[in-house]
Image (cartoon, rainbow, N blue to C red; front, side, top):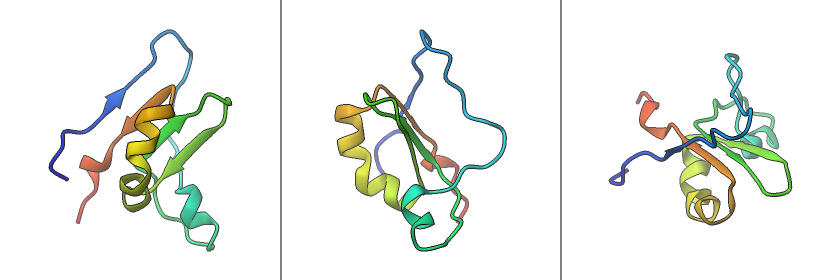
Length: 78
């Protein structure tokens, strides 16, 4: 990950991420509980969460469309 982390917070809205860990929406489809590191709120009002792997895949598109985008991939411990 050569680019700096994205940490955009829309301070005009009352959005927050709970203290409990959230899991990747894509990995959950296969029954895996993989911790999420990328969080986005879409214009439709829906929120999506992705692990570092899927967050990297979808990040470019999320940057284009998300109202709120929080990228914490830099917190992944190898």
